[in-house]
Image (cartoon, rainbow, N blue to C red):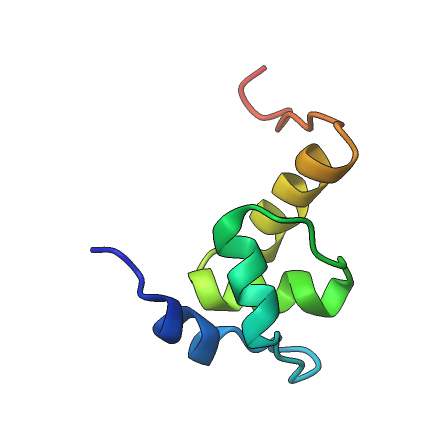
Length: 75
């Protein structure tokens, strides 16, 4: 089941700080445009997607820095 943009935006609240992301940031995420990354933004994205924060942190690191992080479990 696909997550609608409005649903994502409503759920995108960092559980630690209560920070939210703007509609324009959501739009930039959808189009693949770069956004300003902060711990609060990553927390809000994780909450909006319903995924662990670590997953979003790793994805942001790979996209913005080019560092590929591998989970050592199973290596």
